[in-house]
Image (cartoon, rainbow over all chains, first blue to last red; front, side, top):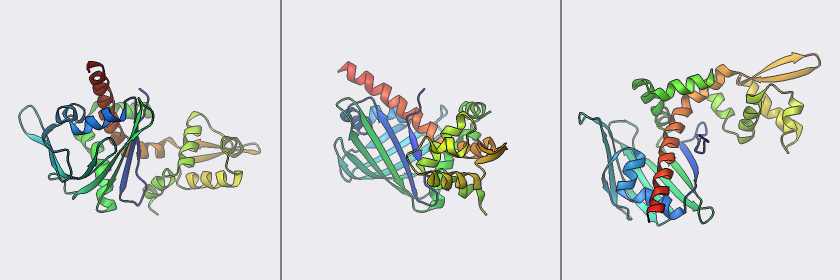
Length: 155
Length: 107
């Protein structure tokens, strides 16, 4: 699989920049962020609430088959412009990272291709680094296959 | 000196990331590396120096020529740290793309 998602986390800054190009018209890319049933599918989390409007709120929750909560996050939509941008807060419950601000920009490249630019701004460099390390930590905890694949690829 | 911090500073620059990509294929002389860029040889030298200082590159003297190699041990420090995060989002976005392509044809 071609690696199209880029993550840029410049040392000493409070930002994470994620960019990705899609073989999709910008309207469909935007829809994937605003329709709860679609968002659920690709984010792999349950959408408890998603009010895709200015000053709207959202809440996500992931549970294991036994019903234990694995992941819970919520935030407020500060601003939303169709097919252009969403500015929202994001806070993970019980993670101790404090709230972050996400600037999600949707850009039409051609009629059928688009680009997503997510800038996450954290309260401190330490919180930023902790967030960045989290999937790595999860990988260890869950003995995720992917970690093994990465390690193998680097051998 | 905090070595880990230096590594991330080193890879924050796009030219330096491009140099790393070049060297991933095989060891190269500074001249051969510079030939791949529009920048001056001095600029590329400076980038190589920064990468070497934080041990991402190692030098090998071969007659009159110096060859630069990637240091896989240090590269792994970077990959371990960022790669699972990047992978997580890449997986999600691949799914998003697949779902929306189906959505489009359904319409």
